Length: 303
Image 1 (cartoon, helix red, strand yellow):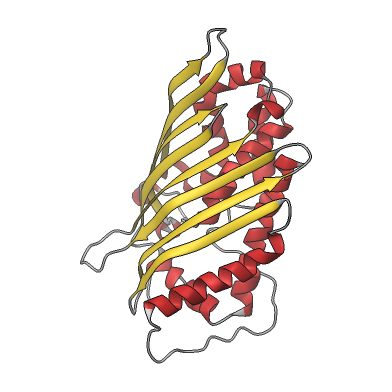
Image 2 (cartoon, helix red, strand yellow):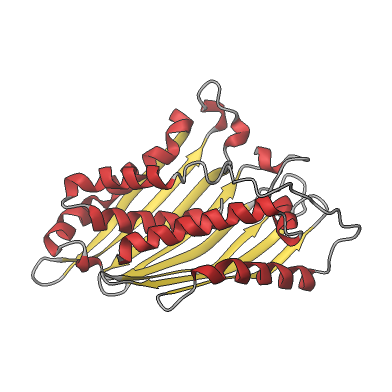
């Protein structure tokens, strides 16, 4: 799972709410914005514009971990620089990176995004995001982290609308997820449950808590769908949203070790990082495209 999808999902949800005039149109807005952003394919394959011929330099010996981490973070700073200004602050820092000859064993990072505009402002952070694929027989790659977001919900969603949406947030999330999951048919299960709705003495909703559980059964995939395309096998999340303090989501999950990205000779996380370190033009163009999409989504919220 790419971290850009986590941030994009939060931004898409808020952007949809900001453009929906009532609850009936909220789910439809979410679908429309998701389609415009073309994020369904972003985790599978993105056709980046050709920026000349890609040249990958083979390194005879692995670079020391500290040196590799420094170079990777330096690259990230360079890529984020065009998006940082008086209204926008973005930061992504890898805190750990371990790779063997075959794959990334452990990667960890923190992310911060804040943007101010004439209509609103938004802050998003992802803390302690970790990806771990131990060097053990039969091991399964896992990921976990905590995502938080803050914006003034009542600037684009009235209290009466919030009172209607909050109790059925599970339905809203399920509708939002449908375009991303349709290719997997009955092989994917998604269970979303609102576990608590908090109200003030006047009966107005002040916050909600919710659980999300999803998994993929490769044996039930529709005919013609390669089981190796299913990268995420399981996802669990617990969220808490409050008008005053924003939203916080703790998530964890497992990747499908038989996914195509983990096969020898295929482009996985290790190969992408190596391309970045070698300043591959196509990889740079692809990452720039991700960043532009996230920046554009943030603009929808802040005006």
